[in-house]
Length: 208
Image (cartoon, rainbow, N blue to C red; front, top):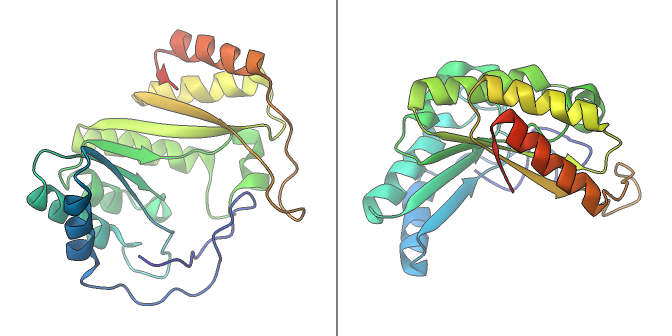
């Protein structure tokens, strides 16, 4: 779906602009490449495509189906955007035959306006994950960056909100600022990750 994103999240290095049209051969080419690699698990992801009527959902779904057709035994995780909150587009991807539907909340609710593009909200991401679970019946997964100034209580509240909509897997990662103009980072010490493990377990989520 290209290398140019229609959004401008403050933590991200992907360039923002007007993307090129979709390549109709991309699903087939992607499936062929994955088959050559011989892997057993693949994560498909993309830039956000707010310029498209369905935010690229049909193209994403076509790629999943092509991969599964070419490599029937492979496990496919789709790491998607929020499709502008359009739940019918979420369902298009969730029902395409994937094994894991992933969508990242990125940070706690209070920091979302400062970290993510203004078109993304924490509650919208929660609705995306909830609908993916309800419509596709697949494992759902999300990820957090730590080190942006979040409080432990905010992380716990986010975990409980995620578990309330059936999210199965949560991963944590340390945010590292790669250029000075991006968000300032704070080192999340190992004790914070241990705290995250306990809070995930308490909330009923798998964590990594």
